[in-house]
Image (cartoon, rainbow, N blue to C red; front, side):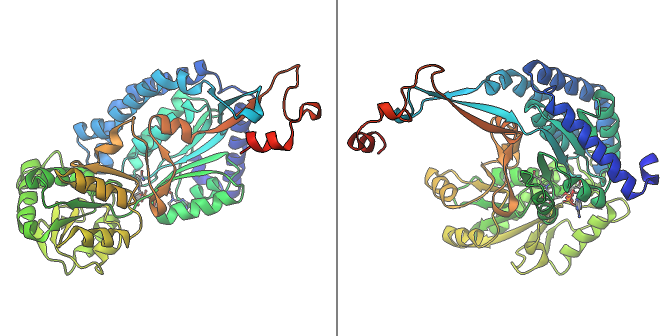
Length: 467
Ligand code: NAD
């Protein structure tokens, strides 16, 4: 309330003061030791545990997430990531020794990992808890301070996160700042040492533009249209079940959800039948009363999605209710590539199914579009898998599965091209929040190196050792 009454100028003065306090804190070395980082990761885990039921309630309120979905796709991932990182952090923090070339000896190389310093983490509304806390775990593991900016659109989650973080941490170390576009734009224009942004391509570009002012490095986790390709030899019922699960999870509001399906023309109708059976199996005949089926974040998004359905051939579903923020799991039969539904990221429970005649055609089509965040392939053939994975560009991929590639701390997660830059999760998170600091050490007393004029070899030798 207090913040709401402040003018933008006085808010900005507060933000500048906060950043100055965090920079002083990180620069005096407070956040660097292994022990400190481990303690803070444990403190974060304890506070999520203490707020777990409030977080789950907020997810239900914002997105109609069931307790199972809230735990498996948000809270559980946080516990697992903290455990994974706590176990490995001592090893990752140790300087890595490298051998150097003959002409630099006697000498040895070491690569230290240096915290960036003060970091800013901005997150979206669709997984409002994990998309904020997983990067924060990386920031803590890397030895940084953090200002976190949850999405204002998932208002219930935003409020619990604010209470949780402010009760667990001093603001000079980790602080929550809340607000909308104007606030975020202001924060992104401040001289943080690193910005980690998750959200839309449009806003990602604005964040990068702001970061340019101070040459602040950015990680951008963005979106796009992720294709699912079914090869002729795929197990069609399995593909239908897994695509339906990945698509309608969180009512389609998952950045790595399969956006559309490309299916051999001979199996096109069979796939749509199997997919609708899978929808019935998972959510029943009346998904609106299924406790496992989520809701659209805002009425405005329901309207946006309803517009995408206009003029489309609906094979299954299609019902929606703006007031209850409900859109039925919907399968579209063969929209054209020029239709709005195929021009923008759907980010909702609408699954276009498009037939193809050859895999070459599929390759050409996908290559002609912006690089997807995720790519899914269903096949039993090793050759098909090798050919497609090698020749297509994408952020991450799942073969005979959807979405689950992001659930592993052992696999880096990130986009490519317009779907983003930089990766995180597990070790990649530690790396996203630290930079390499390479050091060459030569003997402290004797000088046997090439820089000693007395020891310089003939040009013949020099050419040989520096070839
Ligand atoms: P968004 O880009 O609208 O918002 C993200 C954040 O940016 C929010 O915190 C918001 O306050 C802030 N913001 C909004 N407008 C701004 C502006 N003009 N200037 C500065 N900041 C601004 O994204 P969203 O609608 O919350 O999320 C949906 C998008 O996020 C989808 O495109 C989806 O694909 C993408 N996404 C990507 C990932 C990933 O990991 N790659 C994960 C989830 C969502």
